[in-house]
Image 1 (cartoon, rainbow, N blue to C red):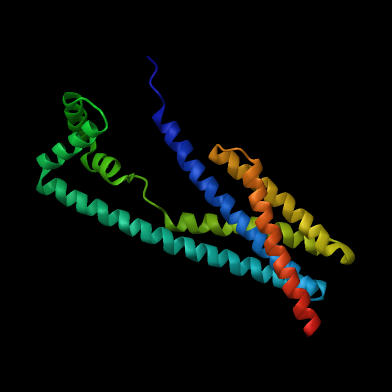
Image 2 (image 1 turned 60 degrees about the vertical axis):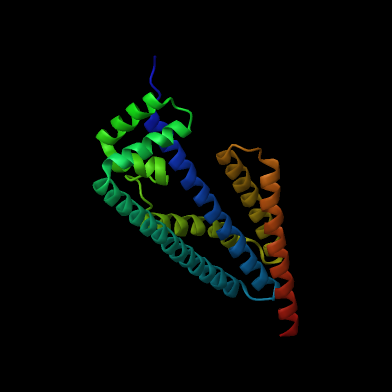
Length: 233
């Protein structure tokens, strides 16, 4: 009988998680930057002022995303390391009790007691901490969260998303800045909605519609505020 390639399946799961994070970061970049430049444009600002505001928003947003992700993932990693250290001490203090605990977990899942005991012994002999981390804590002891990697990925995905509306409003003719930016943003959001749905294995129409709807709402509100402020000033 052919043995499943577990490593490949695990890799695909991790890749899916990173893709979801990248899609969310890009979505934030598109919506926030498009809303910002459209709001500034609605206030009657010059092209240079609009582009300057867009670049500032891109940099600030990317740094904010990176900082937030770094803090969040660092906290997660600290918690995981603390749990692993606690489990390591328990294994040193009471190895037999931990073996029985691991056996009981497999029995609760429907494995026959004698087989559960054999599997628990084999896993303990191979990697006791790794086995308990995975089965009891739901942690991959060899794949703890990486704060710098998460921060970098968030900043890059946000920046790539933000570039789309920024380029659109920078290159569009003066009389068509807003409409060109809105169209480019809607197309990008629709594509991201479809991609996110595909990654999650769901149908794409509703997710894509939700992303586009919220994007249009954000752009509409900031354009209205920009127009009001521009008129008042």
